[in-house]
Length: 364
Image 1 (cartoon, rainbow, N blue to C red):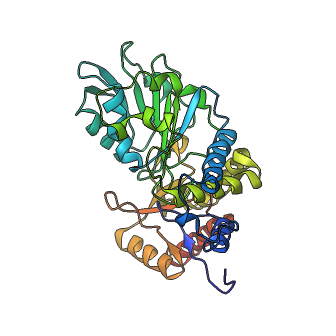
Image 2: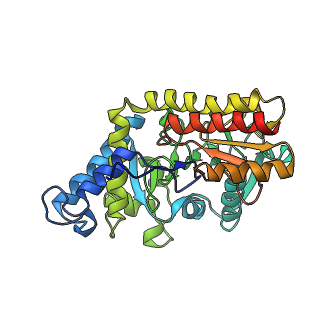
Image 3: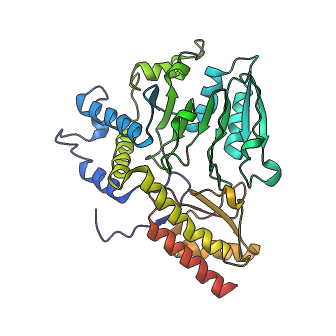
């Protein structure tokens, strides 16, 4: 890569920043992948060269997340949005109930899709606080005959994230699209975890599903082949042509995580990065106003407002001029948002916190 290229401070919510080392390696291998004389994008997904890439990505993900042996790791397409439908299609019968924990826009969308297949209900919702918090564990009182419970582990739009997950006696499903691999997680607490790759795992186009093998056996047999989890499990996610380049990139991101010390080290870095920006908010005496309650703050998506509408517009305009990309809040809520996923470097967060402090000094 040309060392003269100036890298942006990329705070986009997704697709998001990728590790520079991964991009550089992909650039080196783009035309001739490991002596094949072809790009990885040109390899047959049935070839031994690609098979190594595919299987190593699965193995690395299992290792990094300590996935138990009784789980499958699948590569699916369609993003988390397809999982919103695929889950109830397979595991929610028309007469059954399923509890949905409502913490933001993505849980709302998942709930909407589930209503097409069964009788989901809102187990608990924090909408009355404009989704500024995660429910307390004692608020999660589900029905004993629920088909499953569903939660969203991190909320990109509102900037909230779970610190501790509930222990329940029915299957627990989680959308971890925006914080998977950002900290250690006890996979065994969940029966199904799904995540779009485009936040922490790689480029868009790949969806990771981690699912208990015995849950797959309970799937609905009366759904199309490509919407069954067993189709992917029985064929090592190679029933049809997978997004091979996306999986290659995902594998390289996992290698990068392993190389810097694994998920424990990533979590430490994420704490340090987020603290820089949260400190700028907390020490601003109300100039910056954080959206999430302190004990529900996300380490991935930091959401806040600037005191005064005109001042906020000025803040966003000047941030863009200074090279900070993607700090506008989601179009549905406005405000400001810094998405500091795994690959966003500490230096970018430090520069942004310094910009915040300077902006307040000049305009406060």
